[in-house]
Amino acid sequence: MTALVVLLLFAAAVAWWGARRAGDPAGYFAAGHSGGAWLVGVAGTAAALSAFTFVGGPGLFSVVGVGSLWILLSAPLTGALQCWAVGEPVVGLVRRHGVVTVPGLLRAQLGSPAAQGAAAVVIALGCVASLAVQARAAAVLGRVFLGVDEAAAAGAVMAATTLYVALGGMRAGLLADAVQGAVMAVAAVVLAVAALALVGGPEGATVVLERARPELLGGFGRTRPADAFALFLLFCVGTCAQPHYVQKFLFLRARHHLRILPAVLTLALAVTLTVWIGVGLAGTALAAEGRLTLGAPDDLAPRTMALVGPWAVVLAGVASLAALMSTAASFLNLAAAALTRDAFEALGRAPRGLGAARLVTVVVAAAATAVGAGSDTAVAILGIIGWRFFTAALLPALTLGLAWPRATARGAVAAIVAGAAIDLALEAITPQLPAGLDPGLAGAAAGFLVMVALARR
Amino acid sequence: MTPPDRVPVTVGACVALYAAAIAFPAAMPVAVAACATALGALVLLRRRTAALALAVGALGLFTVVLLGGAWLLAARPRGGFIYVVGVLFFLFLPVAPWLYARTFSKSDDAAGPPAESA
Figure (cartoon, rainbow over the protein chains, first blue to last red):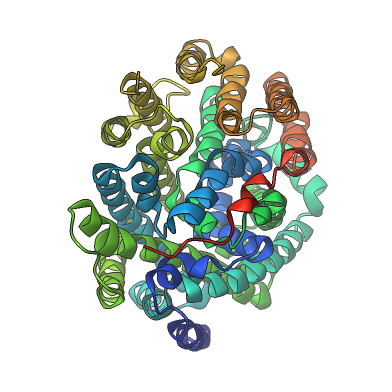
C-alpha cells in the first residue's frame, strides 16, 4: 500500500510540473517538440515496453520457451528501421506543418481529412483496448507483488497515470516516461541477474532445462519455426505502426537528434529486455526443478521474485508499475488527441480545447480500467492482439503514405479499413491458421496491396 | 530523368515471398529479411545514395544469414538457445544503429525550427 501512495505522490508532482508547461496543443500532445535523442529514446523505450515485458514475456517463456524470445529478437533492427521508414518523414512534417498528432501526419502529407479520421478511429479503439491490457497487468501486479486487491491496484495505478497525463499532457508524460525508463532499465538488469543466480546463472538454467524440458530450448522452443519468424516480422515492422512509437518522433526538437536515436533506443531496449530473458529462463528452470509452482503463466515473474527475496518483489513491482504507467500515459494522450482533435478536424470542425482533452483522458482511463480489470485473458495474449491491430491497420498508411509520392488519401483510407477488418476477422480464427500466417501481417499485406492499387498513375 | 518507381514491384514481391514462405517454411528467413529490409529501404525514396543503398542491402543480407542460422540450429536445444540469445540478439545489437549513424544526413536541418503548431 505504501508503494501505491508513493506512486500517487510522484504522479501529483509530475502533474503539477507538466500542467504549468502544457498550455497549448503542441505542449500537451507533442511535449512542445522539445526532446533530445537521449530523453526521447529512453522515454520512448519506456512507453514502448509495457508490463508485457516484466510479466507477460517471462510467463510466455515458461509455455513456449525460446519461441517467446522471437518477439524481442528484432530489437537490434527496429531502431534504425523506425527512423528510416517513419522517423525522418515525421520530423520533416513537424517542421513544415507543425503537426502534433499521429493522424495529423496523414492529413499533412496526403491533404486528407478522411485519412486523418480513419487513423483517429483506429487509434482511439486500439488505445482503449491496449489500456485495458495495462489495467489488467496492474491488477495482476497489485495482487502478486503488492498484496492488494486487484481492482484497487488497477484503479490506483490508472488514476495516478491519468492524473499527470490529464493535467500535464505529454509535457509531463515525457518527463515521467524518462524517469520510469531509467528505473526499468536498472531494475531489469538487477532482477535478471538475481533470478539467474538462483539457478547457477544462465549456464545452470540451461543445463536444468536441457535435462528436464529440452522442448523449450533449441532455436524455436515449442513454437513452430514459421510462427516464430512471423512473430519476428510482426514485432520488427510493427514498430513503425504503433502510434505510441511514432508519437515519440513528434517530440524531437531537431532532425539531427535522429542520428543517435537508433543507438539510444536499441541500448535502452536491450538492457530492459534482459528481464524477459533472465527471469523467463530462471523462473522456468526453477519450475522444472519443482522449486516453483505456477498457477498461470503470468505468475512466473512474481513467484520467481518471491524466491529471490522481499526486496526483489518490491523492485519488480516498482519496475512493472513504471513500465505500465509509461505505456498507459502514451495511450491515454493518443486517445485524447484522436477524439478531441483529429476526429473534429476530420469532420471539418475546430478541434476541442485542452479542457475537453483532459475530460476525455479521464473517461478513456475509466472505461479501459473497467474492461481490463475484469478480463481473464493472459497479459501476453492481450498485448499481442493489440500490437497486431495497429500493425494491420496503420503500417501501410504510416510508411508508404508518408514516404511514397504516389500514395493517395483514398489508398490510405482503404488500407486502414482493409487492414483492420482482415486482422479482426483472422484474429477470431487464429488457432486454425497455417503456421506463419499472422493476422496482423496479413492485414498489413492487404493494406500495402490496396495502397499500391489505388496509387496515383 | 526520374528514377523508376520500384515500390509496386517491391510490395508485390514482399507479399508474394511471405505467402510462399507460409507454404514453404524453409523460405521464411529470406521472406522475413526481405520484408523488413524493404521497409527500411523506403528511405531511398527520399535519399538515394550509394552508401545508403549499400547499408540497407548489407543489413538485409546480414539478417538473412543470422535468421538462417537459427533455422539450422532449430533441433539443438543448447546450441540453438545460445545462438538465438547470444548471436541473433546481443551480437546483432550494434549493427543497425551503427549503419544508420554512418549514413545519416543532416540536410533537412536547413529548414529551421518547427513551424507554429496548428
